[in-house]
Length: 280
Image (cartoon, rainbow, N blue to C red; front, side):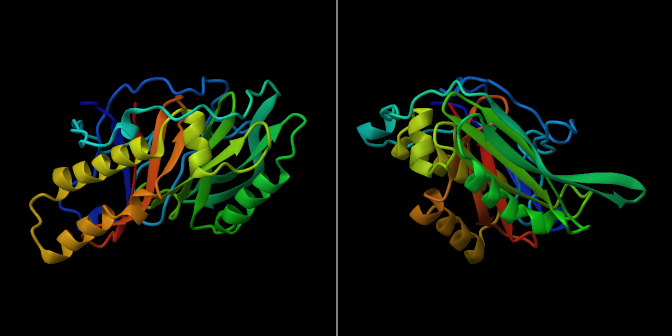
């Protein structure tokens, strides 16, 4: 039985009867050793941020409601306990930096808030397509005075993980959406879910089991008193294979293996949550 950390982003908490939370652990160090990590909230030269989803609360690094819980892993096939074969992608010693490719400041209640969109640069590698995709996704949001974008990142031997937060209502920590992008340091391209899992040394089935257990714990801990048919339907839908398979693996700014599941439908006016956390 292992512990793993689960953090949930939630929007419009007014309708909630209980806070969404996860478990705090000290997961094992990922196979992507720490190289460079930073946050766009604390630096103007090299910036990073955390990730977001529509109608969500709190990022992984700035949690307001977290609780500790222990998850009992389900009985699974032998595959779930095996490490995935290491990816053939070579380690990269090329100089790698993450900084703003777009930055914009705007006034909110007399304070200047900033939007930051990251750019990954790997010496001798073409990352233009990757950076263009990230910029296209978030630039229109960053131009909106009612929202801002910021990020955090981790640079490992094989990949760079970006954790991007969209604060949908500037200055309102209860309105956030989260996104993850993984970039190969050898090709400069966006890594698929399976490619990132191989780099992390985690099998797809083992990863899915951890995500499924995290979702089950969320329902048990925060909605156990809700016996409505609607809640039961939402819970059932959240555990379907299409939702489990949509979870994205990444390495957080502390070098921990992590996951993000976006847009789980839950009871209340918030409508959806993002579930994210770390695992060993």
